[in-house]
Image (cartoon, rainbow, N blue to C red; front, side):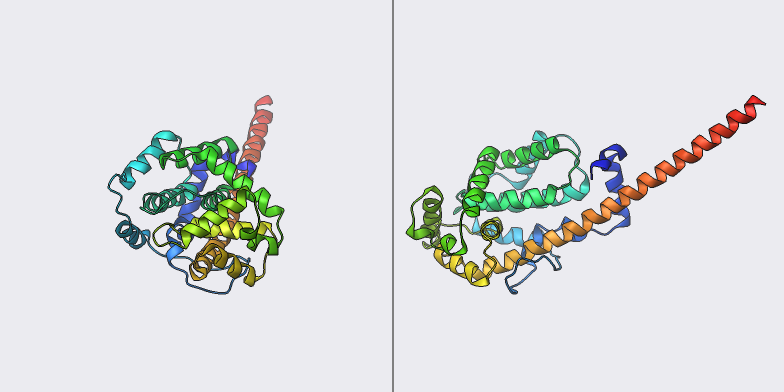
Length: 292
């Protein structure tokens, strides 16, 4: 995708989107409500479609924090923090994600935790993979998290800590965290304690993706491992299964959309090169005729 930068990335994606229906990626944030329980596996193949509006109403009913800012304020904060245009293939998804995360962020039971952070970082990095500028990708991440009045550095640090910890685990040790000592183990114990108390833990779809990432890094692909981990954390496995299905769907749809975009960009480059060759040939003929 490096060649994209020389072809006006924003303009190309807008033209590309007129030729391709990518509603499945545009609505992947809201799609977390559309897919129901299927078997647990790490492949990525499915369909997504739903509206975020109904999900938003449910969360608003659950949230009764009187000092919560409106969604429009969070979105405005993001736009103020990052003023450059974002190609719509990415921006549409980011805008829906920030709405969803705002509603989660301001629920009464919400409390930041590193598994949630790992889940968001995983989704964000998958979404923005192939973005033409790494500097812009990082700047967008910071603007997004700060718009939610949280610390982007903490998200990254905690996600990295969890990834390093998970790589050192076996499937068995991953689910036996409660019997061991350590920084990550204590954090997981705290989650399990709060999740076991009514109203003390706010489950979210990013939390489910965080669990997925831990399992993935520990090479724990057996369905029973997820079941044991959910049980150890006092988390509803059916909810996790459903949300992981949607996450796998998201990955599949993103790959498809980005591959089609890449093909389109390459075709445009080829057409430009051909037009340039024709123009040079025409100029050469003109020069030759002029010499006579």
